[in-house]
Image 1 (cartoon, rainbow, N blue to C red):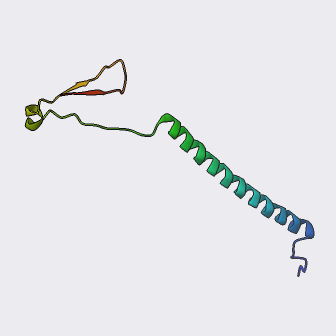
Image 2 (tube, helix red, strand yellow):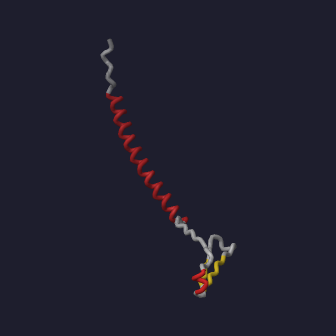
Image 3 (spheres, one colour):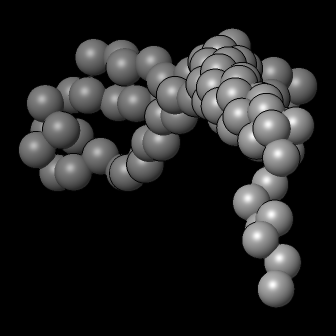
Amino acid sequence: MNTNCFPGPGVLDNLQNLSEYQILILASNEYESSKQKWLYNKVIGLKGNIRVFCRCRPLNQAEITNGSSSIVEFDSSQENELQIFFVK
């Protein structure tokens, strides 16, 4: 029967080193993940993540009787720009 079944001191030292290395890798991964998330949010903010949607409707009878008129202009050369003028 073999009584030498326990690993030698070199193996235990290597396991300890690997465990410490794993902790360093996990901490580095956590740092890089948070950095990536921050950079992604920064890019989204710089691109402009606010979108405004509007719906244009015809004037109702009360607005017409008040003398209101609205003019909606859209110039295709100015992409994504809508100008609304209210004239009374």
